[in-house]
Length: 367
Ligand SMILES: *Cc1c(COP(=O)(O)O)cnc(C)c1O
Image (cartoon, rainbow, N blue to C red; front, side, top):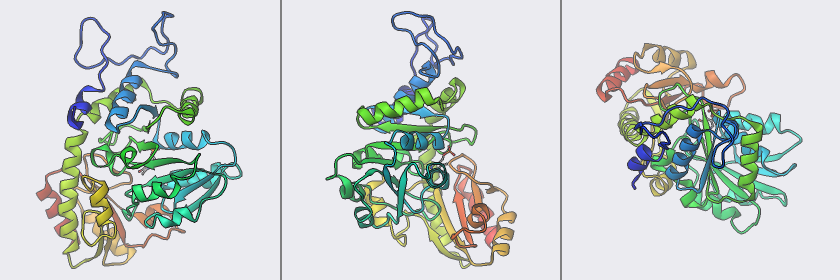
């Protein structure tokens, strides 16, 4: 089965003898004790099992674990590590997960942040207690590309280092990190997998069902940060259209990136599908599409950039990404006073509205 077919069929597990075509939502938290029955919804629920089966197949893994948010999925990996393990993570790691490592796991785990656009930086950060290499590509907000194969090669000789890749921006439609050397893939399914800005969720997908994965399952089932049957159902439903949505997002983002690159009021555009992007060649080799996220430097001050954003009709000034509706935000305003992001950097989640409407809206606002 190809991706589109898996996406539509692998998330359905029908046990009702009257054969509904879509899987019903099983709200019951408890199950009657029988030989093959489930026991309790925190440990397993029919809708979550169907979702996990779907996610494992889409990322070409052996098994998947669904969580109540992307941050909960990431935290399960950190909690599954032995105490005082050392982690190598990207300096532009998703801020919420970076905050976990710096603030929540302070004194419990060690971390070194490196620029992963250069894979050799990973090798020089390895310590005797390094237990995890965390990769995120493309990254936020500059869409930096990490060469996944080259990054994995830096640690592959050393036993005991797990490699996890945050694949939220690329999605399994465009990138399969397990094929490129990663052990586990992480997703914030709040973004493209959910796709409609109405479900919070996260996931881990593993290449091997080994002792580390068992530890992650323990964190999921006993820690209890699991998605509800409703969330599992809606996510499974959303994923059915993921491939088609991603094709639309990437097509629109590519055209808008080129349009912006040629605009006199734009200084620079960051989109991995542009030849001018420093990660273009690596992205072309490891991705089958460049995704729907881009950012650009507006020729103006913070105030002028805010005014430009306020003129837009179809790009909502909001954070997050991956929904059908276009979003735009000035990143520095969101990241706060000690950010290193340029004040005129604008991040865009390109949506699925008609391209002509998006282009004429940008034309009106950029001048
Ligand atoms: C949003 C996001 C997360 C965190 O996911 P939540 O669902 O918000 O908890 C992690 N990584 C990336 C790349 C994200 O965009």
